[in-house]
Length: 451
Image (cartoon, rainbow, N blue to C red; front, side, top):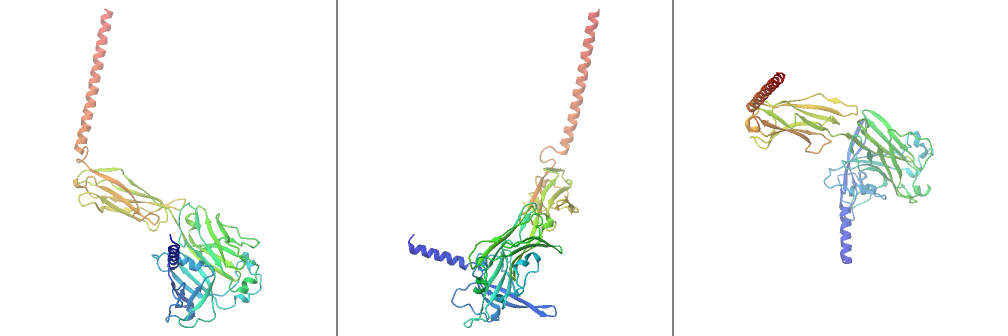
């Protein structure tokens, strides 16, 4: 390839990467309106622009139209990889006040008596959620909006906490791996130079909330010493900075590992990264699933005479979780009505049976109507749908045989039985006759020898 062509290809490839994902995130700015009420005002985050000047937004207050400056690249990078077919993310923005963390185990991050002057000024927290990511970012806006041609406020992303697994679905008994990354940029050059070179110590916290109860699952403070709460349920976190640049920005990893998850471990998981007077948090909704086993009895064949009903069918749906979202359908494949139709007949479901591992089972019943000769060879199918299964679900089937059309009919069966009975009787009679003749012959021979 010629050098010019190579440069053009690289440029096009770079443009493709940069142009992926949304350029603007529409948000709601939420603040206290007094009297226990909240007000919501439109706002927007400009992630990138294609021209020298940002596009005008006369519908927005310039203080709520933010052009994001992200030295670490974590916030902007997350949206560059945002799938084009994914739904638009939900975004909320609110005021933020730097405060020390309340937990005792993380108090070593804030030995000062008051918040340093480097953190003075206005702060905003942005929370974004979607099926493909969940993040929060602390933004430090500039004091004044930029002038015309488009009034806009430049805001620097200081602390961003991000996960690409916002709604993990884990099979019961398997390990859960919940990814978490974060990035920190010192809010001012003075703040960076006032600290020791290299990334600062931080605190990592994972909590679970479920059914109104909250538990601290794991806490870690890389770079600090002191007593720490014990981890629960075998949880482990990979907590640390990815780099050691002297003055930032820095990126880190706080991925959470939970072994052999069970139903009681599902719920909302809150991941919090603590820095001195700054906290970033994101949430994940962990769901535990176990696909059902499906068996149909009697199987593999059922018999019925024309005009008579086949035996009752029992479809056992066993050891699945959760109990919600289960659907059982009865289908009839083949026959005179076409290839597929909903099976007719009376149907009902049993109550749930609970097992020691948290899974449940139930049985679905179908009493088919009387059959016709045209239904010979059709198949009754029990199809089960559940959130843990693919879209087509899981199925079990049984084939209907109409007596007299394939194999022996009922009359033939009775005739064969009577023939077999008579033949057995004849064999017994012949056997008795032969034995009697043998005994008589033996007696005559003995008498002749005696004479």
